[in-house]
Image (tube, rainbow, N blue to C red; front, side, top):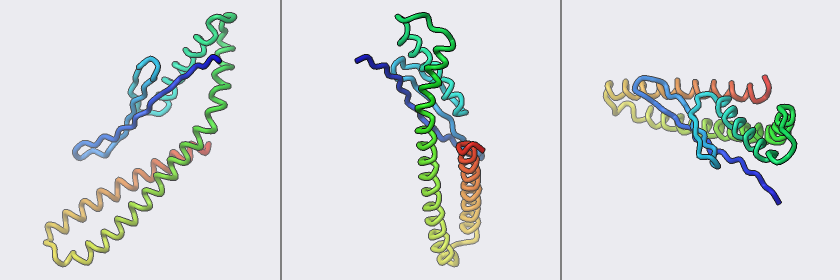
Length: 159
């Protein structure tokens, strides 16, 4: 039995710098060739995968009749047609997990705020101002993340 394998490792990295909102970037690695690429948009990672899948298809058919662009396209379309539904499911499951973690984080934050409120009378005005500033920054970050998740969910659902 002949078997061709194309494997990728995706790494998502959250970077935060002083005073700047956190941003995400990614690194993708083609396992068989050890080639890597950085990406800021997921479409760049998909393009990287497509290049390596196309090369594997070319090599798989190297001994056969000459490979026309149509044949490469047909084989690639077949492969992505099999993979795309699973990709959407994986992304939706990941988003649901993120939303659940966000919900739990909100509950934890609410509990912490309740405890903080109860003990606020025991803190100095400077400490209270610092805590309020931290809470405001966290709230802004949660709002940005929620908007990004909403946007991603909209795009995945074809909106």
